Figure (cartoon, rainbow, N blue to C red):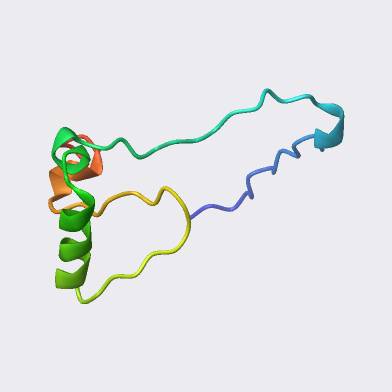
Length: 76
């Protein structure tokens, strides 16, 4: 039974307006060669097979067909 409470360390407050961060663009998705080789017609057909998936926006990624196409390691 623990009778003493652990002391909570207070972190200093950070004023992010005074810090100049380098700009970056996060791109976590890496398209596999199998997905990259899909034509627009194949993508549309596959989305229709998946109960009519609809997308919005520009440069939307193509749908994946297998877990291995997610770009994650085998451990994941």
